[in-house]
Amino acid sequence: MDFSDQRVSYEKGELHEAVLIDNPIELLNLWINEAFDLNIPEPYAISLATCGSDNLPAVRTVLVREINAKGIVFYTNYLSNKGEDIEQNPHAESLFFWHDMQRQVRIRGTIAKIDRAKTDAYFQKRPYESQIGAWVSQPQSGEVDSRDTMDNKFEQLKQQYAKGSVPTPDFWGGYQITATQIEFWQGRPNRLHDRILYTKDLNKDTWKIKRLLP
Image (cartoon, rainbow, N blue to C red):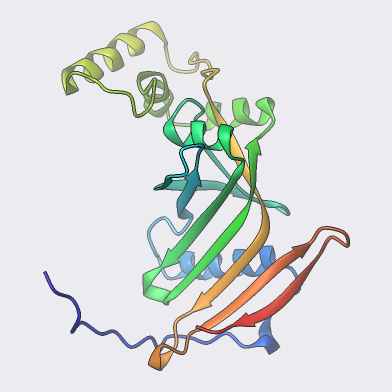
């Protein structure tokens, strides 16, 4: 298939220095709230890119469960491919993309496991069958001989654990990306997009702001 003649003119917004906020986390919260107001499905979904010791990049979609003063938090299987990448190389980049707003946000930074108590608290908030699913998906990304094997394991675990009694797997938990760079992108006509990059000054705990060419 050839998409070389397909064109979309980006004309839904603009991003000027005059409206910027000193702290990019506050601007990220603002943009996500605007996405919620427009009923964009799962505006907290990100593409997460990691790279392990094999030097081969890998990307997948995960759901952000918290935005805090330092960055973003998501949960996954520590023994998954992404978990292995993070263990070998504690740096990652994530991408929010909201097509209907013609906006995206890239977050680059260091990544590490969060406090275990916080993981336990979140796990107990998950729907019962999602809790069971975390136990079934072990090792995540591992080979399984059939769908029936998965479904049977799911039913066995439901028999083993009643609602309210599912323990947090020790191989499952949260990660935080502590942001060192955050780039805001707003689509503009003629491909002259607005790109604003925030870079963390670790010595002063402040953010430097600059505009990038599209």
